[in-house]
Image (cartoon, rainbow, N blue to C red):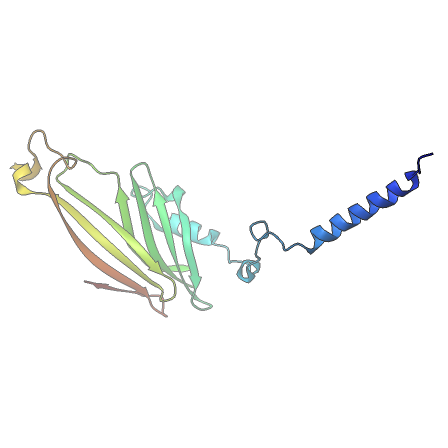
Length: 195
């Protein structure tokens, strides 16, 4: 007669399941699967909707697509002084501005970047790019002017244009640049220096 172990199977399965649960519970958490809670994310950020309203009214809608205003950065320097960087886009250009506010009213505004689709038939193309340092409330704008070399251009009626067969895509050019540093001051003014 064979020995019977039927009564031991449920106990054996429970012991295995218990060992698996203990093993899984003792493993280190997967660092890729866990999310780190940043203490700064618990602090609510101030609303910037009032800035969109303010600059929609301040900017000329004939010059800029004011419906496209996006607040890129906002800092409160004191209870009454703040500044922001905002951008605007249309079919051809993206423009960015540094603007200061005193008591939620516009104090000063300065364009810090403009990047437009190039008109390759024009022998001169200008654009600018900026870097922002929030620790010093400073933007550094580099303004570029790309100009076709004289041998690729002719002048008619006081206007320069490319010789036949040339454009900015295939003509030799020179690029000049200038750096403009803008700093937001404690009183809400923007200081500007060039180099």
